Length: 193
Image 1 (cartoon, rainbow, N blue to C red):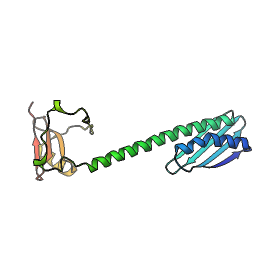
Image 2 (cartoon, helix red, strand yellow):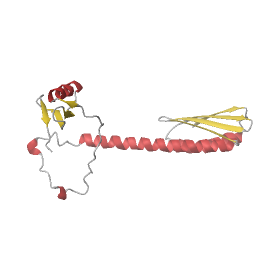
Image 3 (cartoon, rainbow, N blue to C red):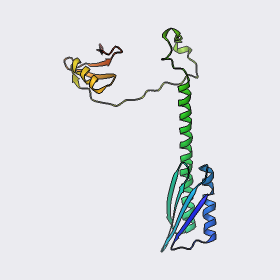
Image 4 (cartoon, one colour):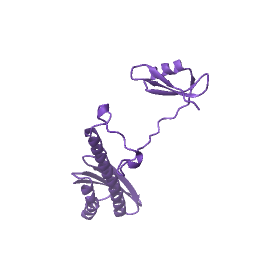
């Protein structure tokens, strides 16, 4: 760890340098690798200011604290930087886990790619294993249903390039769905209530 200490209206004593190095030593373990640390210490009347910037391979952390004692300012900023480093480390760990899960999912054969005759028959819901992942529902955007004719809905769907469009039929005011079929044509779902 390379520490550069700058003093503004304050002399950098060996005791002050040692205190700063001791407080910042934990950051090197948390951030896994060589660090460049720049510490700026300033004294203005009764205000003692400590500003620290830490650069590592993966992070740039910074903090500033102003108290009545220079040692307290350094300690407070070091504690703040430790919290930032822990948060960064957890974030990096969760990104690695997410990437590993995506890699496993990409390697596993998908059921959609399997031929229809090779697919196993679905087991009843009661016989589902307890380790099966829980299905999640994702909300999509909300939008106001416009009254359209079926032809206008198909034109709007084609212009947007989407797969489905939910609309309100202009003549019956019922909610309908127009969708793009695999053969390139459009289908309409008109539910009965």
